[in-house]
Amino acid sequence: QVQLVESGGGLVQAGGSLRLSCAASGTIFSSDAMAWYRQAPGKQRELVATIRSGGSTNVVDSVKGRFTISRDNAKNTVYLQMNSLKPEDTAVYYCNAKILRGLDLTNYWGQGTQVTVSS
Image (cartoon, rainbow, N blue to C red; front, top):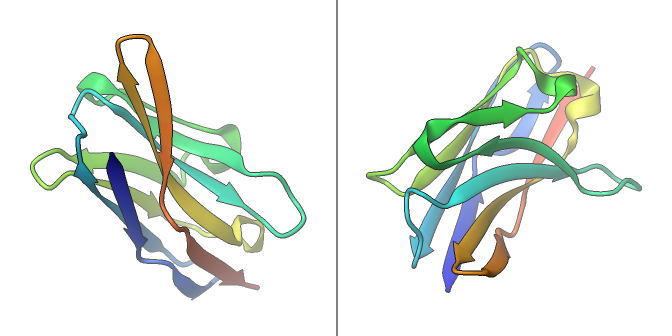
């Protein structure tokens, strides 16, 4: 079992910055991939950024150059640094852990943290 707890959301003006944190506990290793997703009102949940074993990262085009995903393995924590925020970044942000054990892949989710960007 893996537990994920997000923090760091809030209200910020356009152009501002926020850093989201996701603290993981349970049976999780530095080789497990983790990701941030977001869901805006009336829209489907979408992938924002992923960090994999070895530290390789990917972010979607809409946040490229503004958002950075990183990981502190000693603290079992994943971060999402969000700069130059735009009103369209407003959403609930969810932390995700992709736990692969043999052939079994399990997705774990945090409870979400609200990010609101005012214009």
